[in-house]
Length: 74
Image (tube, rainbow, N blue to C red; front, side, top):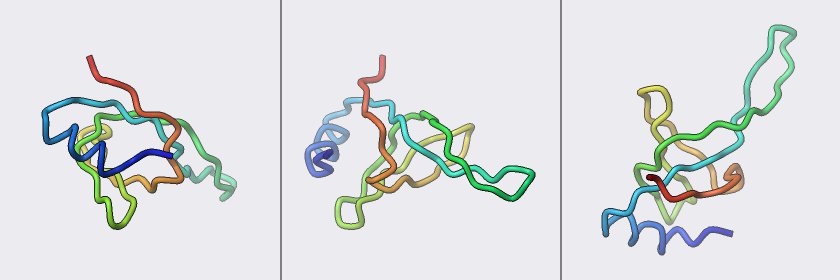
């Protein structure tokens, strides 16, 4: 499990990360599948367990239980 307080401190220290996460995607037959996406980690909300990521120019939030892995950027 990720320590969001540690990650927040590291972001404050200007470290950069890439977050890989599961994202629910609706299909034409109305079923829902998940795909693995990745984006630059922008911020974390320690109290709510959310991570904010840049994906295709938009900011989205990811729940802690959707995280696959956190990688150093660079």
